[in-house]
Length: 189
Image (tube, one colour):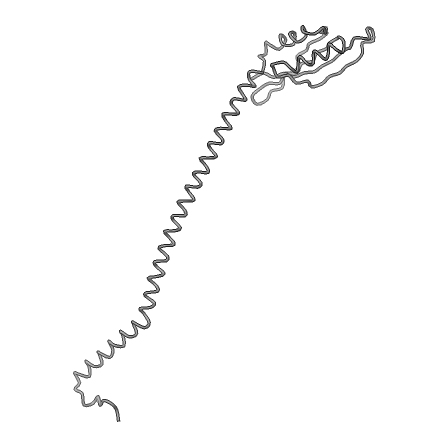
């Protein structure tokens, strides 16, 4: 014996009852199955939006950090450039003009008692910003005078490099030395 006898209920009410049961089932299924999924989906969408916002913020921070690093690098390079320019100006001041080379050597020699046998300017070697001018010098004099001459070259305000030095005793005059010296000086192009 059933709790309700559906055959006794009029057809119109049975339809309404079926519709109501259907609606109740839909509401229950929706509340039990779909609402949690929808709610979870909303939470995931919110998390996704938060992560996108965080990602964009991190991208901006990264760009700012890169810009700051690049700016610091530029400042450092500019400082190095200024320092290099000052150094270049200083070195340019120490480089003789081409016309000054014989005068420079004569000044140094006049301060000592050496005799010049030969001053020969060899072919120049061109560099990026300057020219190297090798000069071969043959001198005659005493050992002490040679030391003063070399000291004069070293203390010169101009850049002079001693490339080679050959010292032999003069067989005709033993206290004197025959000296062959190759130096290099530099001029700005």
